[in-house]
Length: 257
Image (cartoon, rainbow, N blue to C red; front, side, top):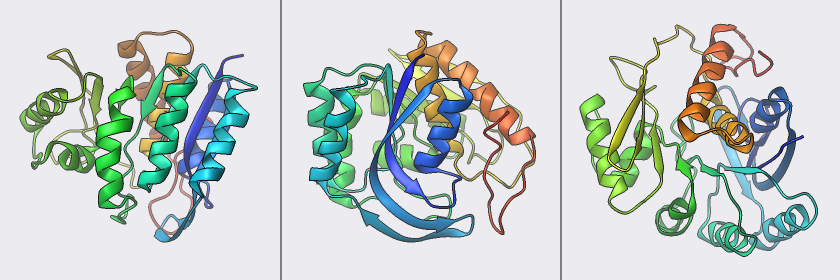
C-alpha cells in the first residue's frame, strides 16, 4: 500500500484541510498520514478562528512520521507562519523527501487571509522551490507573480513569470475565471491545458485541498506529472457532479466517488 502524508491545517467541519486530504487519500486506496499545522474553527459559511500548532510540535510530528512510515508522496496545504514553513522545509531536506505537492493556501474560499506577509515570502523562497508541483488558484497565482490574472492568456503570462524563479511544475487552477474552468500545467516553457466544462455546483468547499491530495496519490503510484494531474481532475469532476449538498454555505465535495 502506498503511503501519503498531508501537512496542513484541520477543518473541524470536515470539508477541507486535513480531513479532505485523508478522505481523498483513503478513496484512492492509500494509507493516509497527517501532520497538523493549525486548528481552524470553520464551516461551510467561513473561517472564524485559527490556532496555530507550535513549530516545535510540527517538527516532532514530522520526525515521528519520517522515522517510522516514510511517505511515497507529500501534500502540503495550509502553513500560516514563517517558523512552521522553515521547520517543514528543513525536515523535507533532512529526510530527502520526494513527490512533494504544495498547495499554497493563502486565502480561504470565503476570502479569509490564512497567511501572514512574512510567511508568504518564506513560502516563495523556501518551500515552493523544493516542490515537484505547486497548485495555486488564480488569486494565489496573482500573489506569487505580482499581477492580476483575468483570462487564459494572463495564466500563461503568470506561469512564465513564476517559472523565472521556480523550476517546478506549475498548475494554475482556472476555477475562478469568468469564461472557463480550464487549468494550466506549465513546466520548462511548455503549457498543457486541461479543459473542463464548468460544473453548476455552488458546493466547492475544499476543492483545492482535494485536488492537490489526489495529485500526491497519483505521483505516489509512480505516474507522470501529466497523468497525475489528468486523473486528479477527473476525480474532482466526479466529486462535484455527485451533487452533495451539506451545510448552509459553500458545502463540501463527495470524496467517496
